[in-house]
Amino acid sequence: MPSYTAPLRDMRFVYHELFDAGDITALPGCEDATADLVDPVLDEAARLAENELFPLNHSGDREGCRYQDGAVTTPAGFKAAYEQYAQGGWIGLACDPQYGGQGMPATLNVLLEEMACSANVSFATYIGLTRGAYRAIRAFASEALKDRYLPKMVSGEWSGTMCLTEPQCGTDLGLIRARAEPAENDGYRISGTKIFITAGEHDLTTNIIHLVLARLPGAPAGIKGISLFLVPKFLPTEDGEAGERNAVTCAGIEDKMGIKASATCVINLDGAMGWLVGEPHKGMRAMFTMMNEARLGVGIQGLGLGVSAYQAAVDYARERQQGRALGGTQYPEQPADPIMVHPDIRRMLLTMRAFTEGARALTTWVARQIDVRDHSEDPQARKEADDLVQLLTPLVKSYLSEVGHDAAQMAVQVYGGHGYIRDNGVEQYARDARIAMIYEGANGIQALDLVGRKLPAHTGRYLRRFFHPVQAWIDANTADQALQPFVLPLAKAFGRLQLATGQVAQAGLKDPNEAGAASSEYLKLFALVALAFLWARMAKIALAKREGDDSGFYDAKLMTARFFVERVLPQSGSLFATIMAGGNTMMSFPDEAF
Image (cartoon, rainbow, N blue to C red; front, side):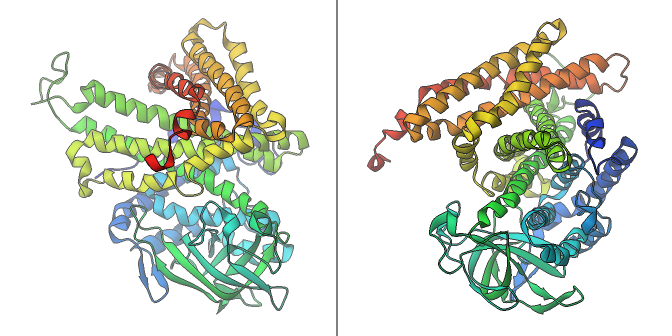
């Protein structure tokens, strides 16, 4: 069976060295997030993930959630682990102290999220949905709703969900039919059916707070007529405890390919009491706050699973003996060499390593921008940070979910036939990773969001937040001979991205199908350049610090960077060629010929 060890050394590298942690402690409300506090928090979170969450991962997959008479029971051990997680303050780590949170930076929280996803991604879904609901309520709800619900959610006593999808609509939320009728106490009666609701019913908390999209009477058609409502499973009493049962029921749970310990529910609302969050008919604005949080979380799920898959593959490659090295016996004292000596095994292991370490740097970069956006007193700094978060969110969701999926598939391949056997554990990673490419907006939708919304937004302002610092870094380091192996490939790939951006923008103006046809490859090209930029920066640090480092950490970092620019980044060439070829070959194909 695989094991999991939190990659604390690399987490500290991206937190303290790749980026200046002093930038975070300089933000109002983040002054206490020094290394003296951050490092012990990471240590304790690692112990929790390794010793409490990971041991439940395989058993939770075997047992799954159980549904009976409207109630859902999570697998054995989940409730106790959740109580320990909540009582330790981990759910509210990055939440506002006004509601009982600890006010720690998002940059620290994403590293904790990665550990939880690596150890037990099903468990992590319950936590992630609550955090997303917290953000939407905090940003848009009335003070009365925030005071009533947020403290219990921050403490982990109550959890949260988002209820968007209905049987007749998924991505196209303009087709929503759930309705809301004005009722007593400034409330509304919500009726309708929602499907695919993660954590919609379970036994981990005493109450579940649903954020539900529905239509008010006379609402405009389509997306502009949707409002957002807070609908609790139990109506709070005067003293703030869970009281009378609301008309919210779970009609069943899905039998899924993966994340079997995460309850995916059908939720029926039969005149359930709810309260408006934000303005009437402006529900999508509020819900996008939660959706963007969830999309970043899904990317972290991909990263977390990729890390676990990599660690499992490395352990197996060290132990499994098979044949001899192509260049001659490497371990003559053994009956065969470990499979780690074979080039194709090393190709897969290094690909997984380069992807996951680059992905960790990317999520940390985005999280730092979230901290600036949420805490800076400089309006311009907040705007610039939010621009970059908006731009990079589809990359994190889409590319990192694919990274996790590909790493899981490679782990199965490293194991060979044993990887296909359930008892050995890695096939679970392959099944669990698959959903991340689908939910919270399928990856094709993320690509359309990037080319259709983010590229043209504010006449290219979002793009400038990325293009300008990348170009500035290239210009500042081109003359450094030691960095040439990293700067020049980055510059070449960045040039391709710039040309592809112009092509997508111009062709899309003439024919939207042209932009759509290029969108998936364009997102992958953009993500490769983002990772190349971060790998070049990591290589610069490693070059400066490798002397005198007995641990070999910086040498390994430098060699992984070289592998990325030599063996992974060249994919930018084929992606660029595909983008420039246009979409005629796919769009001109007759429908009836499929």
